[in-house]
Length: 398
Ligand SMILES: [Zn+2]
Image 1 (cartoon, protein in one colour):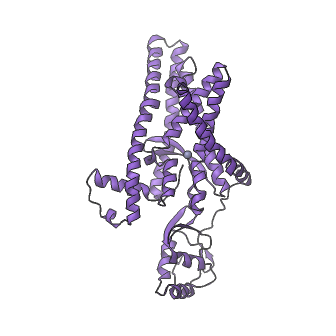
Image 2: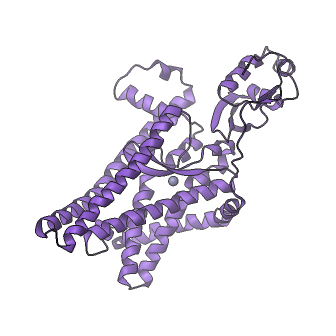
Image 3: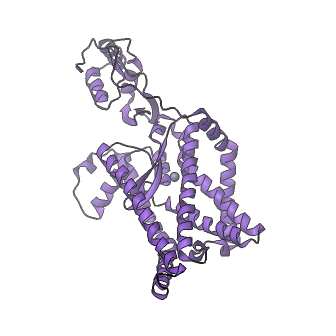
């Protein structure tokens, strides 16, 4: 296709969303493709005029007059053309925008579950959980809570199934909260470093006002809190051993997932909250740059070219990385090492003590089966991770 842009070309970009970030900085983007660009005010004026009706020459004349300087509109259009943000040139549609609006039912559910009243109640539930853990420290999860069946194989299988159901609930929270904002999302598996995670692609959220993004980013954790709260209450009101067993197992798994969000260098939910608050989508790269500058003493010319506020954010965020590191190590030592050691010791005992004709032997084989299943899921995550690296575009997963 001939994409020559001249002063006579009529370009349509009216599908782009425009959000003000900080003084004189705007994010323009296409929520359907997930392409976003940070631009100054003058570019916003240009975009607003590019409606496919008036020519680039006319747009140039208008903005040059307004800003009293020569604005190179053709160059700007070439840039957004590269970013696949142009809808049509001279009436010729470049990419048919797919209608990815969320289903009405999801929007309605999102509006209900993330109404102001319920969001306030989620905050109350958070305080209540803190209170319950403080007044009754014995209710804080222990690794023994994981093994609720007599045999290790059934317990392991049970842990995996419950953990995936809880993960799904967390992601559906994101999905519904984003649907309320009329943003379509999809849930998929991905890798954060080596950890397999489920995530909800909420890239389109950048098309919504800054303050509207917090609830979708935190939606999963809001539901986590409610689940923990409900389980702690259940433990108080029932004596049924299996119900208590499951409620303790759920508290263990959800609390782990909740605290995991604070390891922000894994681009978790809290990472997106912080980067939204600090108005930067390049927090991760900039902070890594800062850390390699001070720790590895690398000389990075790109660092010197960063705007002052991006530098400040990177330093501040580098500090949060440190806190994330401490949380990661603590979680690993408290929530992961003891149960794995305990599980492995049980498996070892079953396999060495019991023969192939024993139930306990085959029960231990289930553990191996579970690991294989997890391995397959990990490969799916690897696929997403590799594809993303290829696409190299800024996305939001939470
Ligand atoms: Zn999340």
